[in-house]
Length: 154
Length: 432
Image 1 (cartoon, each protein chain N blue to C red):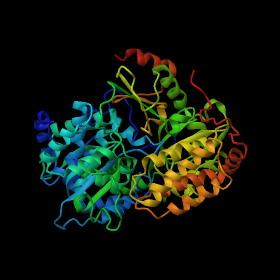
Image 2: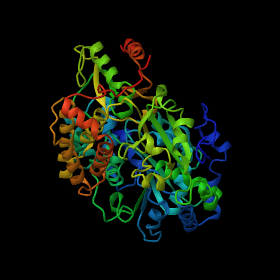
Image 3: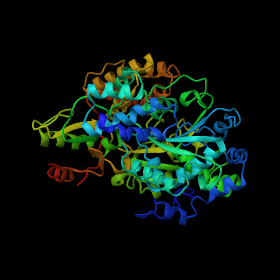
């Protein structure tokens, strides 16, 4: 995490002086973008840098669904399964993804390339169903568009 | 168009979200007017006079919330725009963030001046990608143009706006959970009192308003409260952004003038039910509001009083249309799985109740439902109501009771025959 400290210093300047604790979420997010997950060493270093208890960072990591302690595939596919997406075919598309990739939701392909997850409402209900690939929303999905998308993933 | 528009009345183009376009539409002239010719008290009075109601779900009067802040108490005050749009079916604030981010920023600056706020925040849900980039881009543009920072519009008024990204927690959309999250902790809601306007972010007076509520401030200060009150109804002034999805021909975000006929909105403006099917039900304002049947909506108007009289609510404006043929048992399963997933675990009735309800609906769907399961779902819903710190447990109960009340026969059939009367269908019209 140490190489991110100059970046964190700049981020800190945007917040009021007494807000060091608020930096936990943005710093954790940045660490995860950088490493792919949050390692034990990151927690120790971030706790020391911000002067917050280690347990606060642990609690944040175990609470928020977007944070993870272990690496996942290079491509993270998240299929929304909430109400509007379900009503527009996401259950069918999830089954299609599981069949095509040969894994169940929550698993990673044997070559470590693709992790498949389900996710709750992403605010994409008017363009349902939505599949998120890493950070990017792919909306109005159907089986053909999923197949085309999978071909593009290296 | 479902009535007059206050927020969306411009053409969306490739550049309409940018500062230059916003300025060409008259953007930031209202901030100039506010800073040069109005006192903070005058702005607060105008907002109170407008009767603007919160658009996040609870419909609390914005002026009343602001009125708790004592301008000369010598403490820092904070302002947070709640952009943690996570109520399933709701995607209206996303429209503002993507297409009118400067309208939100101008409104927040006016609010910050009125509430004597030095640091304001936008708490935006962590998954939002384009809305975040558009908003952060607008903040960067505003700093470069001298609209944010030490001297806003070269005047003796300083304000910073910080975009704070959530990390995937529904409960952080609840105002006190949001605050705990900005403090860099688990997004646990807090007991009230004290109100957040008394002790909020880092124990300082804090105003949290929904994105759409704030976006209305610029228009109210520009045209005056009286002009605002001429739109909508006496008790629900203004407009509501309704995001409509599900089995509807033309899903999307519509700005609806309060008082507009419900059925006309569904059948004319939104093109009716997908595939020309009959309308089975509508969840009017996000999944936590009670479902209404197709027949029930016929006489209703889209405003707070009309929906309240029908036992439901305009909520967060997240409208979900359900076609005839949809299995309501499977639909409730989707909802209860969600509430279980999102319970923060702080309060026993919700933590245990959500898991319990989820297990019950799962066993009904698996064909292992018991005769008293319907009664149990009612009982757990009742036991949650008002017994938890935040409203999530209550909301799960409202959603459950709303569906059970009107579609009980489907649940009874499912339990008795160990299968759905409607084939377990959620998707009534398939994509090509």
